[in-house]
Image: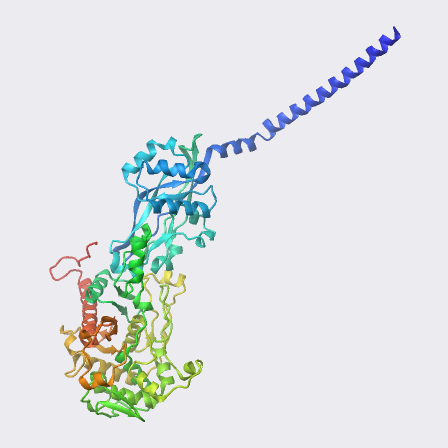
Length: 625
């Protein structure tokens, strides 16, 4: 009996312990539920919302690029693209196969998509194909449930209405590279986003790009948008107005025609670039859509180098267009005066070396004015010998040669003004013969067409050295490091007048080398200087037989044709430079191009001042194409 009572008491204690433990556990569970459902309810509601609410980045519209009169040069058009998110797609190859059954999908599209997926995080979408038609969009949307990870996205594509005529100035946009994607701007992670790769598209990328917006979108279980909950619109990029005049640009491009070359026109007071042509050009839209291997090979193998902006990156011996530099250096040093005469028998002898004048019979006795007008080589051989290469180089730099001018375009080249120190740094001594050949802009001297145009502008301006710029907005120019500063050239006005008078005689004098290209409109006359630079050594046998004509030589062995000029002569406003690669004589090939540009610049100014053209209607605007 006592044993039964002990057993009953033990059972009661155990039941109480178990019941107490259960009560404690239930209390703890209730407390946890209260904590999660009441105290932490807001946090977990937010987490739940995050699972059904997508935060999307909105790409801004890229700023337009306009010419100085407001004509659009680079614009945007609406397009649709199909994107793929690897994290949602599962079997990527199967998804791409399903997509290819609905819309055309090339092997290049597939390879590019797989490459982009492999090099970035799987939750980031990649573009599979862009520029979809309405039928393509409809087929994808109807079959959306069978295309996991696939979505159609609306975007914008860059268009260039004037194509090759402005390709080197505007540049182009292209996909974000792996290195560029590492920048802090989240826009660079967007599929199909394009950024400036060359030209002003690249220089002014920060202003043209704009600022991204955001959109909160409620989605269903398969990710299809149901409704937009909140939106912060993107800020479009700023429109960019260039100093370029589209009508003048067309004249420059048409005048160069099928030749390989470059032409630049400047406002000599401000340094604004009114025209900058480099031929042949390329289609900038091709880089936006993506070049094929065949297209890239054709561009890179073309001997006329269509991808290079020859206006700022082409380096050429300036030939006789360099003679004003030599004359100013010699005048400033006092080794010649305007009245100094040099006899030209057709050659110049220095020791055992013979340097020939372009005119085999010679020019006879000439002073500086006629030496410039007739481009006598012997006169400038002697002037260079007297003044020395170092002073020639110093004068050339003051006039804009041998230095980067700071234009708002990438890939500008410096050119070369040789000096004794420059050659000594290469382990060789400078010779007098090299000074002599420098006197006619040959030898080591190299310049870009932009530098030659700036040299003409500074000779015509006479007082200041403007910084060349393409943008018309001075505030924006300062933003990228350009300045309105104009350094004093420190040149004697009397010396400049001699040079300008000589350049006037080149075009308008009875014996000038460019008299055939003169502007015959009263008050619009131009002054200039022709140049023909050799790209090969002329043999003695060729010289004795009368030098083989350029047209009988292979294209790549022909001389370059050059011209610099300014107008109007009485009150200079515009300057221009022209280089035609392997074009032959500057007087016959380059000078007419310079004339067309300088005449058109003045005519356009007159028309816009009057407000109408000769027929009484508003000044024309070029058609697209």
